[in-house]
Image 1: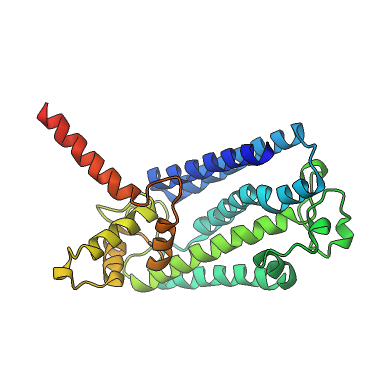
Image 2: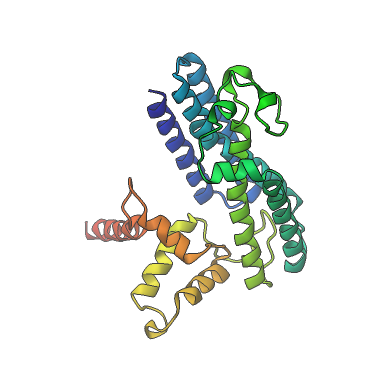
Length: 281
């Protein structure tokens, strides 16, 4: 029961975050809205859990090890990202690169400060789960670092730290992508909330990656001689966005389950056919 409800709530949360990402241009507004929906979704999960908390020990471990961190990570991620956006230098690319590299070191330092727990998380080990993810567990015996004040009925010794590991993995990827973008496009400075060109990509990054692969594989650029990396760099530079590592994006496209693997290209076709049908009437 709780697995089904949490899956539904998580899909709703991730759909809302994707919608905000595609509709909002201003990073500040985007982060504020993302933080709000993350908090709201975590609260819905909390209320349902409290009302239906009769779980077996194995179910409770799974909840605090997997389910709650999957929600909590978004709250932490958007909180951290908002701080980065707020403190981003408004000067040129060099200042921004130095700032972002400093933030990346902070993230990496945090992960290095918890080597045992981070490896436990990355390797999906289970030997200490009863110390980390049961509410009755003695926090002093868990060997975990200090955490924010816990709500006993909705917290275990390890769920916050594991959620933060997930959030910081996401934040690390975001910072690396932003740093690479600044390095490749030093003349395109990143000023939060300010439009830098007449046209910029405001849809999901994954959609632009899908389009980039389609353009490359169909040989539409430079008589089919343009390389994949060249196509992605051109799209990033002219549409003021960091798409990320092409191969990683392609893996995400291939892994789609609920949606068509060519979701965006299909939507382009549908939009064009709809316009033709309307004009035919």
